[in-house]
Structure formats: structure tokens, C-alpha cells
Length: 326
Image (cartoon, rainbow, N blue to C red; front, side):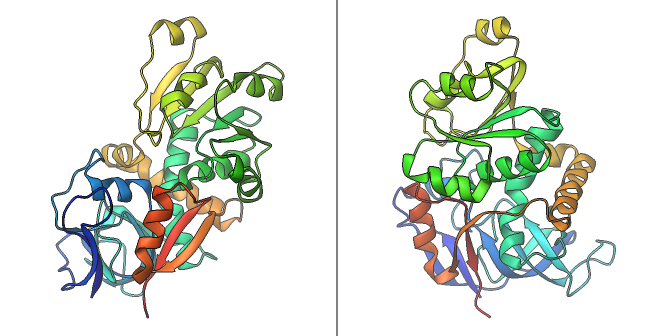
């Protein structure tokens, strides 16, 4: 079968190649899946460099997230051959066949294509865990979402809007503002560079944001501490800016806000019942047509480099999805 292999760590993808390898053997507790589509996530890029917190030893098959059809499963897994499923694991999705722990899969929502399902799982479960599970998102709250052109940022905008929040989408790239407005349909789109607190204050009538969702870090995090309402929450999702920010503890003390760390996958692993409930809630919203993932482009797996390089150049507004041949 074809699989995208990381044979050695590299800064320029030179250690990555599409290869023919043997199909994986299904272990007990795993589900063998015929992969129809798989989506690219930022950790996939980081893992090719050895820069993600999870550091698999090369060689390994890349890819966090997929959608496809069950080939084989344990009788008590809840899955049978032919079931349409979505989900994934830390690696293995960028292949024609994958063996995934049953707990990492869920039924595809009715009405979604394989490409849409592959683009939905990780981004929306991350957004739901952060906004709803950890921050208790309520109707009418102001939510400031950074990195709003990425898959997780767009999912946070879409989900927050579906649940009745007032959404300010923020991007560091002026050229992306129009595309974000079309894809995410937030209430407002702002440029998050320099001092953007005044823009947030003006839009919220001085109330600022009850929730700030930050996958960017660095200077954006620093300025976001000035944008959180008293009693609000600043959610640390990642550090795509490349700089891990620091904060003096007197700032959240004086302003009365909380800094919340978000690791959605680890949260679901530690609290599997909550993880299942989150997946069910996202699936219900998708089946009701209230949320829909934003896809920048769909590529064949043979064109994997285009997707990875576009992500590295920060060109994307939405997810890259790789479709498998056949």
C-alpha cells in the first residue's frame, strides 16, 4: 500500500517520502480502516521536524486524522466491516490502510463526505473541548479567536457562532481577512498585530472578550492578556508563532482571568467518557447542519508536498485533505 513515511527528521521535508509498504496488521483493540481521506494538521508538520511534544522515532507513517470504511474489528468494538468512521491516532493516517485503536474512532455524521469528515474530528473536538468543556461557553459571550485561518481556529469560530457566541476572528495576515470572513462567518475580523486591544474594546463596547482562544502564542498571547474580560479565560492552544510566551502572575491576578491549557487529545484519553460525549456533541451539531469544516484544498496523497509546504508558508485558510486513490 502507499503510505507517507517520515524516514528521518528534517527542516525541509527531505526526510519524508511516499512509499510502498506492507499493510498494517490489526492488533487486539484496533480497527483496520480503508482510508478514503485524511487531513493535514499542524502537528503533522511539526513531527517531520521533531518539534512536537510527541516525538515518534522514525521511520513512521505520518498523519493524525482520517475518514474511511472499516475492514475488520473486534466483535465487541462497536464497529463492523463497511461502517463509515472518522477519527485517528497520533500517526498512521496518511496511508491507504490504517489500524487505529477503537477508542480513537467514531461513526461519521450523516450527510458528510469523507473529505469533510476527515477535516472535522481533531479541529472540532479541540475547539469544543476548549470553548465548551473547559470554558463553559454561553450564548451571547464575546469570543476572540486567533489563528482564524487555520483548521482549529476556523473550527473555533464556526462552533462558537453555532452556539450563540459573538465571534471576533483574528489573523496576522491582512490578505486572509476576506477569506476568513467568507469561511468562518464571524461577527468581525481583525488584524492581530501590534496593539489590537483597542480594536477588541471598540467592537465589544469596552466589555472585551470572555474567552480568548489562542493557538498562536508569542506576541499575540502577550497582547491577548489585555483583551480578556474580568473573570474571563485565555485558552492556550499552541505556539504557531514559534515563541512560547510567559506571563507575570500579577496580570491574571489583577485582571481576574484564568489561563487555561488545552490538550484535547490528552483530555479525551484521561477522561474517555467526556471525550466520547464531546465527539457525540460535535457529531450532533454536524448532522443538524449547524457546523461544517472549512477546506482550503483537496489533494491526492501523491501531491502531499504541496499541502505540507502550503502549511509551512502559512498560505492556508482551512484544512488540507488528502484523498486516497481508488
